[in-house]
Image 1 (cartoon, rainbow, N blue to C red):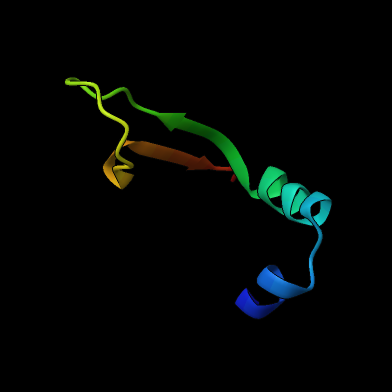
Image 2: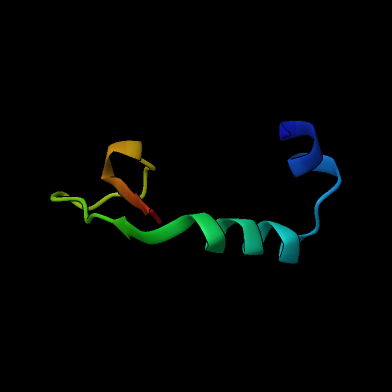
Amino acid sequence: MREAWESEWSIPQKRAIIAALVDTLVILPLPNGGARFRPERVQITFKA
């Protein structure tokens, strides 16, 4: 599936898959600022 995701599926197809699976996506703010990505700041709620 990862190979198909990376090489075969278009952006609209990927968007449709994500929209079907994800209910909410929240990126929490950093207390000190900064531009570094921190995965612990990401909260994903999946659809039931």
